Amino acid sequence: MTQKLFHTVTPHLTVKDAASAIEFYKKAFGAEEKYRMETPDKQKVMHAELQIGDSIIYLNDEFPDICSPTSLNGSAVTIHLQIDDADVWFNRAVNAGAEVKMALENTFWGDRYGKVVDPFGHQWSIGSQVEELSAEEVQKRAALEFAG
Image (cartoon, rainbow, N blue to C red; front, top):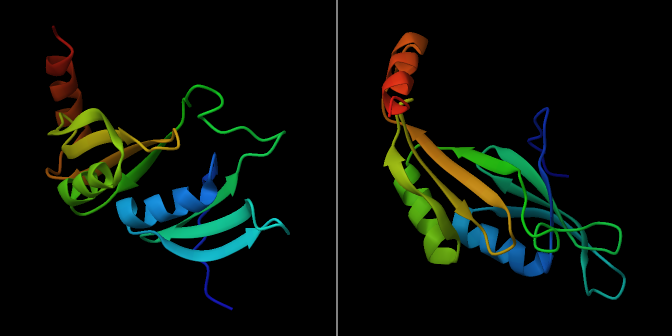
């Protein structure tokens, strides 16, 4: 049995076509498939575990009582990836088929940050620290950013 890297919170994503989503996450975010349980007819994924960096996410197909963001016309949830090189991860996600929601840029809080939506309706923010700032510096920059 493999060592699982669970943290206190584990995102659990529901998608249309989980098998395709798994392949997308492998290509876009370097995910490693740790486990997959399919329905007896092999038509749907009931449960999968993917590792991205040092974290696990759960994934399953849509079922009549479990909807995906695609069926709900979007999601208010964003999954954040805090990594070493936002440019590499952002570009890889876009090249794999993610849609840019917020262009990658250097932010007032000191991160290089952007957002994408994957082909399955989930929002992902991608960031890497480019400056180390105190809380006071961030507050001052935020005031300037929102001043007008």
